[in-house]
Length: 339
Ligand SMILES: [Mg+2]
Image 1 (tube, helix red, strand yellow):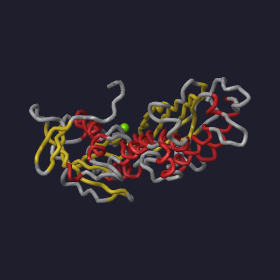
Image 2 (image 1 turned 90 degrees about the vertical axis):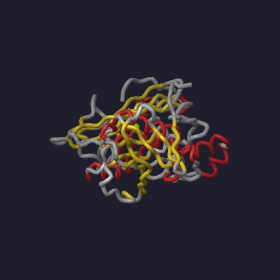
Image 3 (image 1 turned 60 degrees about the vertical axis):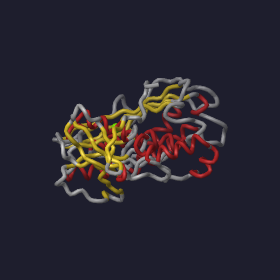
Image 4 (image 1 turned 180 degrees about the vertical axis):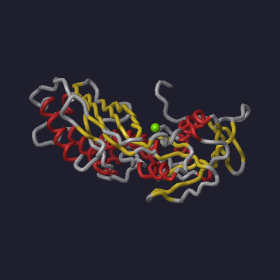
Protein backbone atom coordinates (compact mmCIF):
# COMPACT_ATOMS: atom_id res chain seq x y z
CA UNK A 1 0.00 0.00 0.00
CA UNK A 2 1.84 3.10 -1.21
CA UNK A 3 1.91 6.65 -2.75
CA UNK A 4 0.12 9.54 -1.05
CA UNK A 5 -2.63 11.58 -2.71
CA UNK A 6 -5.74 11.47 -0.54
CA UNK A 7 -5.09 14.61 1.49
CA UNK A 8 -8.10 16.83 2.16
CA UNK A 9 -9.82 17.92 5.32
CA UNK A 10 -12.89 15.79 4.62
CA UNK A 11 -10.86 12.65 3.83
CA UNK A 12 -8.61 10.92 6.36
CA UNK A 13 -5.61 11.14 4.03
CA UNK A 14 -4.05 8.12 2.43
CA UNK A 15 -1.64 7.36 5.24
CA UNK A 16 -4.39 7.50 7.85
CA UNK A 17 -6.60 5.32 5.66
CA UNK A 18 -3.75 2.87 5.20
CA UNK A 19 -3.37 2.69 8.95
CA UNK A 20 -7.09 1.97 9.34
CA UNK A 21 -6.97 -0.74 6.70
CA UNK A 22 -3.84 -2.28 8.19
CA UNK A 23 -5.30 -2.40 11.70
CA UNK A 24 -8.55 -3.83 10.50
CA UNK A 25 -6.84 -6.36 8.22
CA UNK A 26 -4.66 -7.54 11.12
CA UNK A 27 -7.73 -7.96 13.31
CA UNK A 28 -9.69 -9.86 10.68
CA UNK A 29 -6.66 -11.97 9.77
CA UNK A 30 -6.01 -13.22 13.30
CA UNK A 31 -5.26 -16.91 13.16
CA UNK A 32 -5.54 -16.86 9.39
CA UNK A 33 -3.54 -18.72 6.78
CA UNK A 34 -0.26 -20.22 7.98
CA UNK A 35 1.03 -19.81 4.46
CA UNK A 36 1.17 -16.03 4.92
CA UNK A 37 4.60 -15.27 6.39
CA UNK A 38 4.39 -11.47 6.18
CA UNK A 39 1.37 -9.25 5.50
CA UNK A 40 0.87 -5.48 5.16
CA UNK A 41 3.80 -3.27 6.17
CA UNK A 42 6.79 -4.17 4.03
CA UNK A 43 7.44 -3.76 0.31
CA UNK A 44 6.06 -7.20 -0.43
CA UNK A 45 4.00 -9.79 1.36
CA UNK A 46 5.69 -13.16 1.82
CA UNK A 47 3.83 -16.36 1.10
CA UNK A 48 5.27 -19.72 2.02
CA UNK A 49 3.93 -22.80 0.30
CA UNK A 50 4.51 -26.30 1.61
CA UNK A 51 6.55 -28.74 -0.42
CA UNK A 52 4.50 -30.11 -3.30
CA UNK A 53 2.05 -27.20 -3.43
CA UNK A 54 1.27 -24.84 -6.28
CA UNK A 55 0.07 -21.24 -5.97
CA UNK A 56 -3.25 -20.42 -7.63
CA UNK A 57 -3.66 -16.72 -8.50
CA UNK A 58 -6.76 -14.91 -9.74
CA UNK A 59 -7.60 -11.25 -10.23
CA UNK A 60 -10.97 -9.49 -10.54
CA UNK A 61 -11.79 -5.90 -11.33
CA UNK A 62 -14.93 -4.19 -9.99
CA UNK A 63 -15.82 -0.76 -11.39
CA UNK A 64 -18.57 1.59 -10.22
CA UNK A 65 -21.24 1.90 -12.91
CA UNK A 66 -20.17 -1.41 -14.44
CA UNK A 67 -20.07 -4.11 -11.75
CA UNK A 68 -21.91 -2.18 -9.07
CA UNK A 69 -23.78 1.10 -8.62
CA UNK A 70 -23.11 3.45 -5.75
CA UNK A 71 -26.81 4.38 -5.65
CA UNK A 72 -28.02 0.75 -5.63
CA UNK A 73 -25.49 -1.39 -3.82
CA UNK A 74 -24.75 -0.96 -0.10
CA UNK A 75 -20.98 -0.46 0.38
CA UNK A 76 -20.88 -3.63 2.53
CA UNK A 77 -22.27 -5.64 -0.40
CA UNK A 78 -19.74 -4.12 -2.81
CA UNK A 79 -16.92 -5.18 -0.46
CA UNK A 80 -18.40 -8.65 -0.02
CA UNK A 81 -18.89 -9.14 -3.75
CA UNK A 82 -15.38 -7.92 -4.56
CA UNK A 83 -13.85 -10.66 -2.41
CA UNK A 84 -16.49 -13.28 -3.26
CA UNK A 85 -15.63 -13.08 -6.96
CA UNK A 86 -11.99 -13.95 -6.26
CA UNK A 87 -12.82 -16.65 -3.72
CA UNK A 88 -15.22 -18.24 -6.19
CA UNK A 89 -12.38 -18.61 -8.70
CA UNK A 90 -10.23 -20.32 -6.05
CA UNK A 91 -13.17 -22.60 -5.22
CA UNK A 92 -13.44 -23.55 -8.89
CA UNK A 93 -9.82 -24.78 -8.84
CA UNK A 94 -10.22 -26.65 -5.56
CA UNK A 95 -7.69 -24.29 -3.95
CA UNK A 96 -7.33 -23.30 -0.29
CA UNK A 97 -7.34 -19.49 0.10
CA UNK A 98 -3.92 -18.14 1.20
CA UNK A 99 -4.12 -14.34 1.03
CA UNK A 100 -6.00 -11.46 -0.63
CA UNK A 101 -4.57 -8.25 -2.08
CA UNK A 102 -6.82 -5.25 -2.62
CA UNK A 103 -6.20 -2.18 -4.75
CA UNK A 104 -8.71 0.62 -4.35
CA UNK A 105 -9.22 3.71 -6.48
CA UNK A 106 -11.66 6.08 -4.80
CA UNK A 107 -13.20 9.49 -5.36
CA UNK A 108 -12.36 11.69 -2.36
CA UNK A 109 -15.91 11.72 -0.95
CA UNK A 110 -15.92 7.93 -0.62
CA UNK A 111 -12.70 7.93 1.42
CA UNK A 112 -14.03 10.41 3.96
CA UNK A 113 -17.33 12.02 4.91
CA UNK A 114 -19.24 13.98 7.50
CA UNK A 115 -17.98 13.60 11.06
CA UNK A 116 -19.94 10.92 12.88
CA UNK A 117 -20.79 8.98 9.74
CA UNK A 118 -18.91 5.92 8.58
CA UNK A 119 -17.17 6.68 5.27
CA UNK A 120 -18.09 4.53 2.26
CA UNK A 121 -14.65 2.92 2.26
CA UNK A 122 -15.02 1.73 5.87
CA UNK A 123 -18.40 0.18 5.15
CA UNK A 124 -16.87 -1.44 2.06
CA UNK A 125 -14.16 -2.91 4.31
CA UNK A 126 -16.79 -4.13 6.78
CA UNK A 127 -18.32 -6.26 4.04
CA UNK A 128 -15.02 -7.44 2.60
CA UNK A 129 -13.36 -8.28 5.91
CA UNK A 130 -16.41 -10.07 7.32
CA UNK A 131 -16.28 -12.49 4.38
CA UNK A 132 -12.47 -12.71 4.64
CA UNK A 133 -12.80 -13.73 8.26
CA UNK A 134 -15.41 -16.37 7.41
CA UNK A 135 -12.99 -18.01 5.02
CA UNK A 136 -9.80 -17.42 7.05
CA UNK A 137 -8.19 -15.42 4.27
CA UNK A 138 -6.00 -12.51 5.39
CA UNK A 139 -5.83 -9.19 3.54
CA UNK A 140 -2.07 -9.12 2.97
CA UNK A 141 -1.51 -6.00 0.89
CA UNK A 142 -2.71 -3.76 -1.89
CA UNK A 143 -2.68 -0.18 -3.09
CA UNK A 144 -4.70 2.98 -2.65
CA UNK A 145 -5.19 5.96 -4.95
CA UNK A 146 -7.57 8.81 -5.59
CA UNK A 147 -9.61 8.09 -8.69
CA UNK A 148 -12.46 9.79 -10.61
CA UNK A 149 -14.44 6.56 -10.40
CA UNK A 150 -14.56 3.91 -7.65
CA UNK A 151 -12.53 0.87 -8.64
CA UNK A 152 -11.71 -2.21 -6.56
CA UNK A 153 -9.24 -4.74 -7.89
CA UNK A 154 -8.81 -7.91 -5.89
CA UNK A 155 -6.07 -10.49 -6.22
CA UNK A 156 -6.61 -13.84 -4.50
CA UNK A 157 -3.93 -16.41 -3.95
CA UNK A 158 -4.58 -20.00 -3.00
CA UNK A 159 -2.66 -23.23 -2.56
CA UNK A 160 -3.32 -26.53 -4.23
CA UNK A 161 -1.32 -29.79 -4.25
CA UNK A 162 0.85 -30.02 -7.34
CA UNK A 163 -1.05 -31.24 -10.38
CA UNK A 164 -4.32 -31.58 -8.46
CA UNK A 165 -6.10 -28.32 -9.34
CA UNK A 166 -9.55 -28.75 -10.91
CA UNK A 167 -9.29 -27.53 -14.50
CA UNK A 168 -11.83 -26.65 -17.17
CA UNK A 169 -10.05 -28.90 -19.62
CA UNK A 170 -10.41 -32.26 -17.88
CA UNK A 171 -13.91 -33.40 -18.91
CA UNK A 172 -14.43 -36.51 -21.05
CA UNK A 173 -17.31 -37.55 -23.30
CA UNK A 174 -19.88 -39.39 -21.20
CA UNK A 175 -19.16 -37.38 -18.04
CA UNK A 176 -22.16 -36.11 -16.10
CA UNK A 177 -22.51 -32.35 -15.67
CA UNK A 178 -23.33 -31.02 -12.19
CA UNK A 179 -24.01 -27.65 -10.61
CA UNK A 180 -23.98 -26.67 -6.92
CA UNK A 181 -26.78 -24.65 -5.31
CA UNK A 182 -29.22 -22.96 -7.66
CA UNK A 183 -29.04 -20.76 -10.73
CA UNK A 184 -30.60 -17.44 -11.72
CA UNK A 185 -31.32 -16.13 -8.22
CA UNK A 186 -28.75 -13.36 -8.45
CA UNK A 187 -29.97 -12.10 -11.80
CA UNK A 188 -33.63 -12.33 -10.69
CA UNK A 189 -32.68 -10.10 -7.75
CA UNK A 190 -30.81 -7.73 -10.02
CA UNK A 191 -33.93 -7.45 -12.19
CA UNK A 192 -35.96 -6.56 -9.08
CA UNK A 193 -33.30 -4.05 -8.08
CA UNK A 194 -33.30 -2.44 -11.53
CA UNK A 195 -37.08 -2.18 -11.49
CA UNK A 196 -37.41 -0.57 -8.08
CA UNK A 197 -34.19 0.20 -6.19
CA UNK A 198 -36.07 1.63 -3.18
CA UNK A 199 -38.36 -1.39 -2.73
CA UNK A 200 -35.39 -3.69 -3.20
CA UNK A 201 -33.32 -1.84 -0.61
CA UNK A 202 -36.13 -2.04 1.95
CA UNK A 203 -36.61 -5.75 1.34
CA UNK A 204 -32.98 -6.78 1.41
CA UNK A 205 -31.81 -4.41 4.14
CA UNK A 206 -29.19 -6.19 6.22
CA UNK A 207 -30.13 -9.40 4.46
CA UNK A 208 -27.10 -11.60 4.01
CA UNK A 209 -29.29 -14.19 2.29
CA UNK A 210 -29.45 -12.11 -0.86
CA UNK A 211 -27.75 -14.08 -3.65
CA UNK A 212 -27.12 -10.90 -5.63
CA UNK A 213 -25.73 -8.76 -2.78
CA UNK A 214 -24.02 -11.46 -0.73
CA UNK A 215 -23.12 -14.49 -2.88
CA UNK A 216 -21.43 -17.31 -0.98
CA UNK A 217 -18.29 -18.68 -2.64
CA UNK A 218 -18.26 -22.51 -2.75
CA UNK A 219 -14.79 -22.97 -1.25
CA UNK A 220 -15.76 -25.99 0.86
CA UNK A 221 -17.42 -27.70 -2.11
CA UNK A 222 -14.40 -27.09 -4.39
CA UNK A 223 -12.04 -28.44 -1.72
CA UNK A 224 -14.22 -31.49 -1.17
CA UNK A 225 -14.35 -32.31 -4.88
CA UNK A 226 -10.59 -31.89 -5.26
CA UNK A 227 -9.74 -33.96 -2.19
CA UNK A 228 -12.09 -36.78 -3.17
CA UNK A 229 -10.72 -36.73 -6.72
CA UNK A 230 -14.23 -37.13 -8.11
CA UNK A 231 -14.51 -34.18 -10.49
CA UNK A 232 -12.92 -34.39 -13.93
CA UNK A 233 -13.31 -30.64 -14.58
CA UNK A 234 -14.71 -27.59 -12.80
CA UNK A 235 -15.30 -23.86 -13.11
CA UNK A 236 -17.44 -21.27 -11.38
CA UNK A 237 -20.60 -19.82 -12.90
CA UNK A 238 -19.95 -16.08 -12.92
CA UNK A 239 -21.17 -14.95 -16.34
CA UNK A 240 -24.19 -17.22 -16.73
CA UNK A 241 -24.51 -20.97 -17.38
CA UNK A 242 -24.80 -20.69 -21.17
CA UNK A 243 -21.63 -18.59 -21.40
CA UNK A 244 -19.57 -20.44 -18.80
CA UNK A 245 -20.53 -23.92 -19.97
CA UNK A 246 -19.39 -22.93 -23.47
CA UNK A 247 -15.94 -22.16 -21.98
CA UNK A 248 -15.82 -25.55 -20.29
CA UNK A 249 -16.85 -27.22 -23.57
CA UNK A 250 -14.16 -25.31 -25.48
CA UNK A 251 -11.40 -26.15 -22.99
CA UNK A 252 -12.39 -29.82 -22.86
CA UNK A 253 -13.10 -29.95 -26.62
CA UNK A 254 -16.58 -31.39 -26.07
CA UNK A 255 -20.21 -30.39 -26.38
CA UNK A 256 -22.83 -30.48 -23.66
CA UNK A 257 -26.47 -31.45 -23.37
CA UNK A 258 -28.46 -29.77 -20.60
CA UNK A 259 -31.79 -31.17 -19.40
CA UNK A 260 -33.90 -28.08 -18.90
CA UNK A 261 -36.28 -29.67 -16.38
CA UNK A 262 -33.34 -30.53 -14.13
CA UNK A 263 -32.01 -26.98 -13.72
CA UNK A 264 -32.22 -25.92 -10.05
CA UNK A 265 -33.93 -22.50 -10.20
CA UNK A 266 -32.86 -19.92 -7.62
CA UNK A 267 -35.40 -17.80 -5.69
CA UNK A 268 -37.52 -15.78 -8.12
CA UNK A 269 -35.61 -17.15 -11.11
CA UNK A 270 -37.12 -18.33 -14.36
CA UNK A 271 -35.44 -20.52 -16.97
CA UNK A 272 -34.06 -17.48 -18.78
CA UNK A 273 -32.31 -16.27 -15.62
CA UNK A 274 -30.99 -19.76 -14.81
CA UNK A 275 -29.54 -20.22 -18.29
CA UNK A 276 -28.22 -16.75 -19.02
CA UNK A 277 -28.17 -14.74 -15.77
CA UNK A 278 -24.77 -14.13 -14.25
CA UNK A 279 -23.18 -13.76 -10.82
CA UNK A 280 -24.49 -16.97 -9.26
CA UNK A 281 -20.96 -18.01 -8.22
CA UNK A 282 -21.95 -21.66 -8.10
CA UNK A 283 -19.62 -24.44 -9.21
CA UNK A 284 -20.14 -26.19 -12.51
CA UNK A 285 -18.30 -29.50 -12.67
CA UNK A 286 -18.16 -32.81 -14.46
CA UNK A 287 -17.55 -36.30 -13.13
CA UNK A 288 -17.48 -39.76 -14.72
CA UNK A 289 -20.88 -41.48 -14.71
CA UNK A 290 -19.40 -44.07 -12.31
CA UNK A 291 -18.47 -41.42 -9.67
CA UNK A 292 -20.72 -41.29 -6.62
CA UNK A 293 -21.61 -37.63 -6.27
CA UNK A 294 -23.69 -36.90 -3.16
CA UNK A 295 -26.87 -34.84 -3.27
CA UNK A 296 -25.25 -32.32 -0.98
CA UNK A 297 -21.71 -31.20 -0.30
CA UNK A 298 -21.62 -29.40 3.02
CA UNK A 299 -25.06 -27.83 3.20
CA UNK A 300 -25.15 -27.04 -0.49
CA UNK A 301 -27.20 -29.11 -2.92
CA UNK A 302 -25.63 -30.70 -5.99
CA UNK A 303 -27.71 -31.37 -9.10
CA UNK A 304 -26.95 -33.36 -12.23
CA UNK A 305 -28.11 -31.15 -15.10
CA UNK A 306 -26.80 -32.89 -18.19
CA UNK A 307 -23.88 -34.65 -19.81
CA UNK A 308 -20.81 -34.11 -21.92
CA UNK A 309 -20.67 -35.49 -25.46
CA UNK A 310 -18.13 -35.66 -28.30
CA UNK A 311 -18.05 -32.59 -30.49
CA UNK A 312 -20.16 -32.80 -33.62
CA UNK A 313 -19.96 -30.12 -36.30
CA UNK A 314 -23.63 -30.45 -37.13
CA UNK A 315 -24.78 -29.98 -33.55
CA UNK A 316 -24.54 -26.81 -31.41
CA UNK A 317 -21.92 -26.77 -28.62
CA UNK A 318 -24.71 -26.63 -26.06
CA UNK A 319 -28.07 -28.24 -26.66
CA UNK A 320 -31.09 -28.03 -24.38
CA UNK A 321 -33.27 -31.06 -23.85
CA UNK A 322 -36.80 -29.85 -23.18
CA UNK A 323 -39.67 -32.35 -22.90
CA UNK A 324 -37.35 -34.86 -24.53
CA UNK A 325 -36.77 -32.58 -27.55
CA UNK A 326 -33.40 -31.09 -28.35
CA UNK A 327 -32.77 -27.44 -29.29
CA UNK A 328 -29.56 -25.41 -29.66
CA UNK A 329 -28.62 -22.87 -26.99
CA UNK A 330 -26.50 -19.85 -27.71
CA UNK A 331 -24.32 -18.24 -25.03
CA UNK A 332 -26.18 -15.14 -23.87
CA UNK A 333 -24.52 -14.46 -20.56
CA UNK A 334 -22.46 -11.44 -19.69
CA UNK A 335 -19.63 -10.46 -22.01
CA UNK A 336 -17.67 -7.21 -21.87
CA UNK A 337 -17.04 -5.27 -25.14
CA UNK A 338 -19.87 -7.20 -26.82
CA UNK A 339 -22.18 -4.19 -27.02
MG1 LIG B 1 -14.14 -18.02 -12.80
